[in-house]
Image (tube, rainbow, N blue to C red; front, side, top):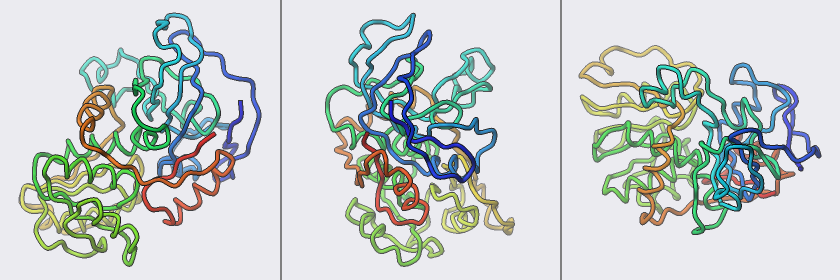
Length: 327
C-alpha cells in the first residue's frame, strides 16, 4: 500500500510504501477511493491533539470498497462501498456506550488519529463502524460527508429547531450543513473571515440570506449559531448575535482559548454547548435526511502525494468548500 505518514508533530507527511494491512477479527480492509481533508487532520498534523501515536496516517473522511474480511465479518460486506468516519471504534461496555451515547465512549479509537486513516491506498477499519454508502454518487463527492457532513448534522440537531441559524466558518462543514438547513426550510446567515469574498459568494449561492464578516452583527437576531472555525473569540461574538434563549454550538474537536466576556451576553438563558464526535445513529439519520436534499459538495481534488499541499491550503484559508485526496 501507498501512504502519506506523519512521523512527528508538525512534520510534513512522508510518502511511504508498506505491506497491505491485514484485517483482524471484526475488521475489514478497504481500498480507498477518496479521502477528504478535514480541519481535524490539521489538528493532528500540528500536534494540537494529545497522545498521538507516531507514526500515524491521517484521514477520516474515507470512501472505498471492502476487499478483505477479518474473522467474524459477514461475507455480504465483500465488495461493498463504505464510508469510514472519525469515530472508528467504541468499546460497547462503558457507561456512555450502554446509555446510547457512544460518541462519548471512554475507550474510543479515532480514524486518522489513534489508528491509521485514509491518506493511503488502503486502510483497516472496524466493520461495525463503517457506513454502507450504496452506489449513487461519486467517491470524491461523498468523502466530505463522512465528517464535515456528519458533524455538521449533529451540530445542526444540537442547535435546536429555530429558524435563523448562524454559521461561523463557511468551509467544508459549513457549506454542507447550510444546504441541509435550507432543505429543512431554515434561514442561514454565514460568517467568514473579513473580505473572504469567495466564501461569502459560495454561501449566497447555496441559499444563505446574508453573508458577512465574523465580527459583524447579522440583520436579525439568531435562534442559534454553530461555530466551525477553531477560534475561541468567536464564542462571545456568537453570543452577542443570538436571541435570549438561543444556543451557541461549538462544533470542533479543538478550539483556541475562549476569552473572558461579560455575563450579560450569556444571561437570558443563552447556552454554549459543544459537539463531541458522532454516533452510528447520527450517520443513519444524516444519510436518510439528505437522500432527497441534492447536497452539492464544492471540492478541490488533490492526488494523494499532494496531501501536504492540501493541508497547507486549508491551514492558510486558501480553499473554498472542501479538499479531497484521490489515491
